[in-house]
Length: 110
Image (cartoon, rainbow, N blue to C red; front, top):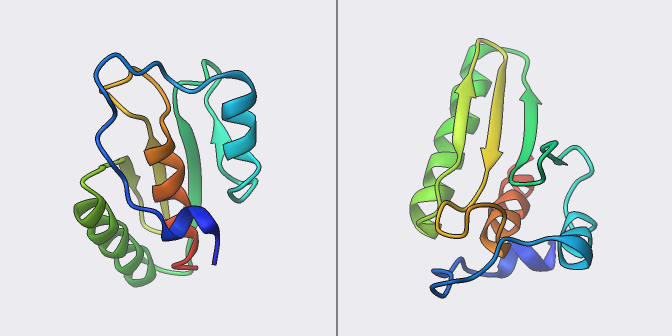
């Protein structure tokens, strides 16, 4: 199990800056390389593929449960055989450790 997957999300302190530079690179190295930072490095994104709609929806529901438990919710686009997930932390205006915790927890589903 990834160490990030065992952590709990917490509310960022007021005035926390988004992750950048070395901090961002260190966290990216701890999650599956299929998670990619957006061009502006304000989110991490991944598209998950599945064999059928039922598998897609089972995955979506599991991600929803993780989001609920962590109180940290992604943007999701759902198709017949895929689910695109984007994580960003609105309170910091970009990426926080919470985004990587949730990405690592999602990886544990696969």
